[in-house]
Image (cartoon, rainbow, N blue to C red):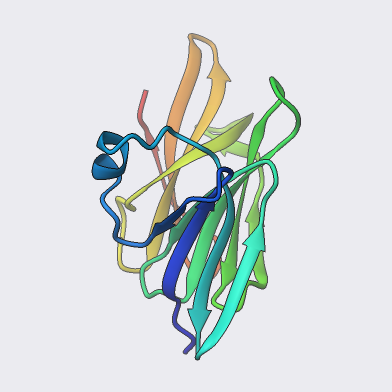
Length: 158
């Protein structure tokens, strides 16, 4: 099976963040937060890369055969995060809808960041879904099976 190696994120200012770099050290050394506009990696000795002009949040998933991505779409003030997964060669495997059913109710929202899966972390990944509820903003962690995108759990965060 194809494995992702040497994963790197490039910021809008051109600085690169290599997998395993200590982000706190980067901040303390003066790096300001910047959106990630390019990701790259190697697989079977070949280089792969994807560009995201509006920004992306990326996570290499357990098993190192897939990358989960939350792509920023829309203009300033209208930004929303689309969640999808690519394989080790950069081909889109599936996307996750921003329309979800939570406790029997259809909800619209966006995925905002990744968390380790609560359920079966060696085969799943977690992503936080943010939506407007009756009492204001609500956040749920969705756990997804890596190879299929099937929801394995929904957990209320706030």
